[in-house]
Length: 409
Image (cartoon, rainbow, N blue to C red; front, side, top):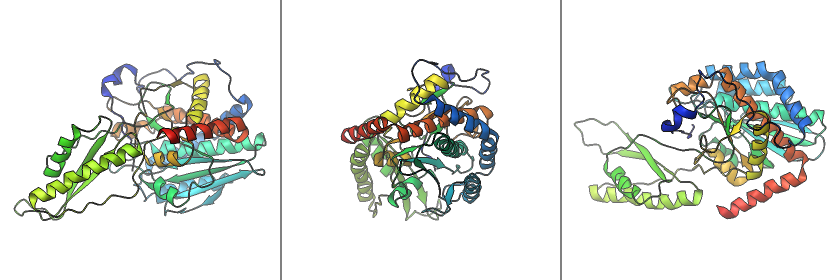
């Protein structure tokens, strides 16, 4: 499952990278500031270039075999074989039937870099959230990190974790899947300007569904009192409904989203009475179940984000704060609450109204330019991971910004 939506159609035409644009992404500010360890970045670039055709084949294979969340058996097998072939220690069915883990250790001691991949597709429209790219990116980051660690003799450990993107991370987090990681890195494709990478903040969720039914009307009334950044939306499910029989059972599945976990919890307290009042008014009984595995906002680590931004601006493209990730709930948000993490968005060429979760985006996710945009952000993530391993003062800053954010949230 994938809760990311981007819908900013009004601005779309002017700035967005279209499939028919001939331009290539270029560095916005080449050589404007120093890059940490250019020799390491060069190793990373060389490795990713060497693996290019293998990574492309992997991505297209996954794209051609879409599977729903918790059912990614094909993807599980393809990825685990690939990582084993590349000398990683692989754990199949890691804490979940389709999740897996690939580990590589070099030298003694050193820190642990977590990398996250997602494998699931969407019902009916395949990989319209581009998880074939996220999966490929995780592999590329892990293999590039390994190459740099070996060539430059950098001690440390890489843990690549892959699961489905609904609440898979919440479950893995609860089961200890992220324990021992010092940082965790991943990325996500979205529409945006050419070469743009959204380095620092989370996703806009909009759903056109507005069911005109009693409990939901109460929520509609409540919305006037909710902040504009808070979202409440849901769907109805029935059992054996027929037009000539009064339904004796109805279920309403509701999502409550807000910019932060604490705001979300406060809004849930205001939403539940809407259902209680509806039951009272109609003489029905109501049972309210709070689902486990609620997803939190993304707390992007500023130090990690700044490092990725610096590399991207000097080498690959632009940093954009308008597009991509503004206010999201994703299960990676839960990871960002637990440890210093980064989840940059990256632009791929898309058609008009072809944002995440549309058939147009499913096609965009298989294009060669989306492939290279994904590899560029992977290089920046790998280089940032290496800096965490080698630069003690940088890692101290990563931890410090994480602690500062803990106070803010």
